[in-house]
Length: 340
Image (cartoon, one colour):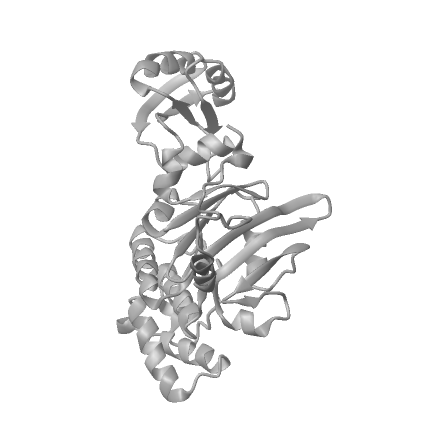
């Protein structure tokens, strides 16, 4: 498959088909909280972002998936107005975004990977401080602080100093800071990295509630299950390019009858991967550490041969056959696992 042509019809069309009324297209554009068109950014000879276009609608959670070096961080930096694009355009809530665009920046709530809070203040005091930076009136700020504390589930702990919070609680408060001014677009950069499972679930539950706020959400993650749970649409990036886009169901439908065999191998995974690529039924193979992922049309008929070839290069410790999911799509399109 030519991955450059695998972008699904959800992408913004270059021109409007005659069958689509112009008024409908204008209405869709008016509902977009973010429109990125042909974004490009290079660092020396490295093309970090190479012609990326996508849009996010009001109330939509849009997942941006890609391995390290795919261009996600560069896109987030440009969308947030921190970094200027070499070419292309961005609009946030209808306003052109560039490093000096204060109105466009005011429409964004940015939640970075690193926690940006004052540890010697309470959770509530942190939120009041950030509300003052947005020049929100005292009475309105008081109401808004309580609203966002409820969204992230920290009302009962809001009177405690942040230095006593767990890592997960700090990340939830970080999200609350990004929500305090009611942004039209919330940018969440891997908000669950390094937190325990309970805190992670609390963060995901908080994000699920954000659609009721009517904002768009740009969500980056290394966890496919998060994208499947939260995202209305997903874009897969690799080497600076957007290579596929659509709902999780649309993306997995591209696989057809492909099935996913995962092996844990003690031995030489590199040689095992090379040998498995030569098998006629195999459509994709990748190896990370002691784990080897194999894509085949029919796992039941292919499994004995796959195990036999892998066993020729080490000891097969475990074998699982998994239902096609976003990780399977990612393997097929990039030849990599997301967390390589």
